[in-house]
Image (cartoon, rainbow, N blue to C red):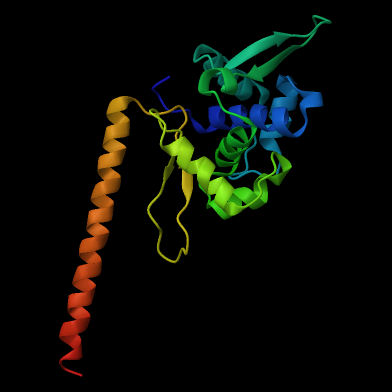
Length: 202
């Protein structure tokens, strides 16, 4: 499970997780229902147009990684599929909702996750979502990471790390975050020194 999920695998896994939280009466899901969920226009970024064969290939890959299991319909006619996020990662409802939002819409701020995730779980505050994100980031195998602030953004966004990185990868990510923070401090110091120098000529 060390190899990162591709875009289609991530979308299929996210759709299964979404349905189990938002409409459990229609879960587990058939392949046709998964395709429809992957291709819907709302609550998705980016938009996709998947064929059933692509979804089946993604389901096969997810089953090989033990992230999805096939559930046989009592009628025996149509196979259905269920995620194994709780068994594999031990997530509770709010944690699963946060991961689902990140998988279906990409990197987001804690505020965006709270506003958009109300269909999946009830969050009392943005602070609650931030606490969940920090808990997921501080695991031995982190499931999310806080991204550097982008130009023009007021808040930093969070991204999922699914599947979680290996120990070496996690160490590398931590080193990169430290280097980015150090570079930001250096830039701020240079900016302050420049402003002080410029003020002498004004």
